[in-house]
Length: 371
Image (tube, rainbow, N blue to C red; front, side):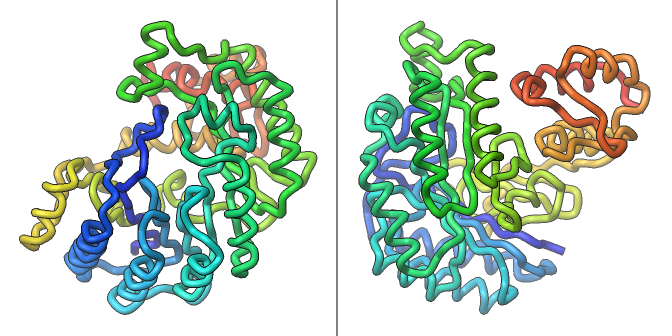
């Protein structure tokens, strides 16, 4: 039974130098309309599946480049074709400087009840280094408009580990973030993905990321600060007030079936992961011909499923059952003695120190045979 629906909107006004998601810098309202029609056609190709949709997530790219009436039209189509619960969590990612109060009113009328704002920082110097095309005031106005429209479940994105960012800079951002009536905060350590502009600059020695010790200090500050202000960490990069965890993202981390629609979107259904075409024009042509735009498929079962449950589960605050690492007693004991993890309720949980080298720990756990 499919519980979640992800919809990828690939359009952006600029390409952020740190972003490795599929996007195109095209501003063409006619193309946006045609793309939404293509999304509808792709959804129709999956009407034979069983749905009990509890979440819809519009991500990107920049979904807020689309006219809100297009979003409303798409959501009404989804309700008509595959159905939605009255209390379904419906999220849209929004960039500051795009939607205004009137736009949020339309979104609310369409059923959207959660907004994730790609704010990243309230300090202009950070926004400049990140290559963002908005300023701090745009962030404040977007939040105000969203709240005024009656959408109170808001996530704010924060990026840390930016070149020349000090601990004091980060603390200033945290003070601002927690002074606002947010329900959720996502804090991401800036990552130099190889195929991004920042990735190439780091490779050439022209962009400096924090060392491991500084990154850990920043993460500890974020965690301590947010927890003190009533935000509980439930995943590596996500903190929420009680009752406001992102249900859709939890589906990803706990292997709940979801369908991904749109160019480059991924799905996980019946133990199989599939991926769509990673090219806008090819995606549009495929859907127009009534062909599912899937170009990748992998069955996740047995040992592969166990491995996934380990590397996804370790991201979560609750960690993984000890049964997942049977036969790894010596390794787990060493990780605990070195301060990278602890046992809680028969589960192995990573500490802040462990989370900073999570990929290395996962490799250690998976490097030898699992029972």
